[in-house]
Image (tube, rainbow, N blue to C red; front, side):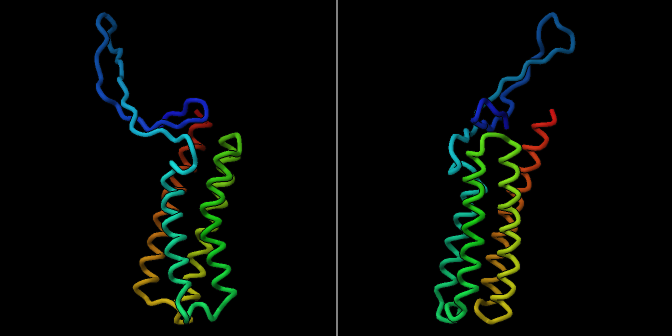
Length: 156
């Protein structure tokens, strides 16, 4: 990914050519695959949104709704994953963005813990637990990769 101002471009090498007359020099042509111009373009946000929708679906069941505190807590935590990505995107610096992405990561861990409570209380089936848990794992992988990229980008 290459950053140009506030816009991130996902690029891939299109072709590599040797420069005539310059031994060992190479020129890369790049193809733009994707541009991140708003937080909705971020894959982690999109996946967090899907997760939040699934959490809301699951917490509609009569069994789950009996525990208002857990319903409120898991909904807030899943929404927080999305909200922190969005807020961090407009934070103004990569350092601040990383800080908010880390908040999102921790909110995802909170959702994982709350899923165990829901499973143990019999509010969700083992199959639904596994599906939701894997969605959270996917979001955390995306967040972790994005955090790592932004940190390395600041170093170089």
